[in-house]
Amino acid sequence: NDVERGFYSDDSEYDERRKQEEFSKLTDVQRPTPAESKRVVKVANHVQSTTRQGLGFAAILWYATAGVTVLDLWPSLSLPVLAKGQGTRLSVEQLDIAWPVPGFEVVGLACSHGHMFAANSYQVFEINTMTNATQALPCDIDEEIVDVSLACADTTTCWPVVLLADSSVVECKDNGRTISLLKGIEAQRLAIRHAAASGLPSLEAGAIAASNGTAVEMRWNEAQQGLSPLWELSTVDDKEKIGGVAYDTGVTFLYTYNNNSQRGWYYRELLRVIKTDTWTTQKIYHVPEKFQGSGPETSGGFCAMSRGVGEGVEVYMSQSGDSGTVLRAAITADAE
Image (cartoon, rainbow, N blue to C red; front, side, top):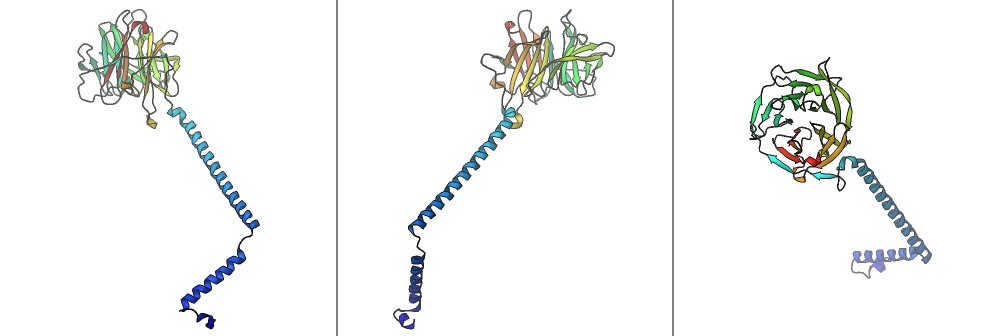
């Protein structure tokens, strides 16, 4: 080795040469035969195929899981869409009401025979339908107001009737009565019926209450001086809520909305005109896109009153929240 090393200029050059020779010997011995090369290629292809299959299965599993999730959420994501020809677009205008303070929050509206009342959670106001001016009215209450209806002695004398958070009902007038919704009914909306003889709203004529998504027929109970439930008139679809209920002679109006706000979707609002004696829907209106979210929804108010014999009905909607917005829409006589 010393002799062989002498042919190189230094030890490092010699060591490098020895390493190359050793490596050359090793590769010569271990170089695969043609048969071994084929087996290597076959194994590699098998591994590659197995890997692709595994990735494909994982992708299918992921999409399947995502699909199940979407199907699970679909009832909450879907919006009620009227079939072509089913709905009629409401022609809506915004009223300029002179509220006592900016951002007045309306929780209820009531109207009949040219009289209109509005309420926030604490007091009641009369609205002049000619000038849109407002005037506060006295009302002896000790609970928050959730809705307002009205009763009348004649076409010139009407007073507000408020529904309170404890489901009691108070007449806002001198010597006004405080009555109860009997049998545990918890109402969020209340519309007093019109007496058949006079055509005037009266507690003795009964009422329609919206209770947890169900419209309930209420009858005056003279013995207990309260309103007793008779039967359920209608339960809306589980994706809808009753935002308002109103009554005019022979016709009930339900304002329903779809609330998908928990998933970031906007509201879809419908006005249903219902023939009260048979509880059959006569017509369905939808609110223009411009005013989506402007109806009564979880708060706000809603009422309806005839404009005269054969002249149709005016409906009023107050926007929920603190904007104090009130909308008016006219329903023609042939749509009643």
